[in-house]
Length: 499
Image (cartoon, rainbow, N blue to C red):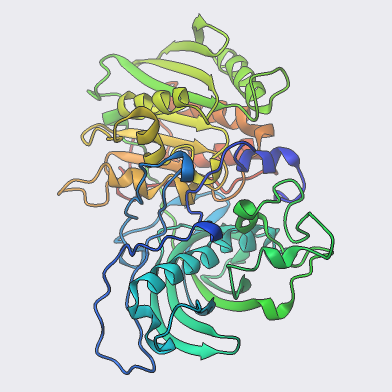
């Protein structure tokens, strides 16, 4: 099992470059919005309890101040309402997760109403909802960085639903806001120890608005409760660890949450839609593959992304692909298979710029297979809002074309999953899964194995072989070796059971 704390190549694959601010699934404490996003009808309950029922999707704008026109994207159907959420991962399992917890909200001096009715004030409701989202984001760090999960890590889907249950006054002019939560999560298979359920306990900050500042010791400019390199408040939720040596956060600053995970069954003997993939799928006699590799920091020699690009180019040639274009940052390879001619267009790109967005949009609109290897940007790089901002048009996917997407970056299950299935939805396919399968990762993906994983995937899917999804994922897992990213396939539950 990969130790996420250890290798810099693993951490670097997870994070954004230092110069850009990614806001997908991120709430900045300093920029809490006042405008309410939802209208809450007042329930007929006692003033003392005053629960406001409100399911809150977690999708956010992708690029913060860099994306002035971005708007939140509706999340997928609430997790609890999914019809058949099974999928397959060799060393990971999907689980249904519910719990009840609370958050402390510092009541502003300008609010003069009853504490018990604070959720009926739209401005206060919005601020509280943003802080609940911020509190929940800290599960990302809890499930990877905290000691009880280092060897059995996980990640929530981000398509969660929460419901306010009660509000009561707490010492220090705080409102104690209690709520319930439900979602799906991905965890290492070993967490369950061959059982169908697992009780877990973890901690979240009681007051997410102040928890970052509590990580500093007197006279220090470095937060002692998070990664030394990614030390900013915007990255804190992803890397925070109150258990690490020297962290001044106290037990009283944290709330312990308990949840009984209910493991879901995996799919068995499911296959990609080969009849569609090798049939009349919109590209004639060509199986078109777009393969984008994002640089780690720059295009210079020694960059980890650049090395992945070059290693993959060599690996595909060794696997029988012929080179038809060989430019520094764009290479094309081809192979004639019994069904079609597979064409791979490889690009080395900077995921921060508009060129990347244009290549990604074109690849996802037209290709049969789309593969991205690089930084996830904490969800920002391939967020539909970001792509729309940089290309000037909203991304749409061909609903009648079968496609396979593989997002080989950090924690892409939470970032690049439901939004793309939504784009494939039709009246006969409300889940959007009949013409799209998506491979995502549960935790950090490593640059050190990126090319091996990518070449293994392409050699398995694009050379005329027709293996099952289970075989494909098993081969990817073998290529990852000890640097597993808990890679899995989503959307295969309605796929054929034969080739």
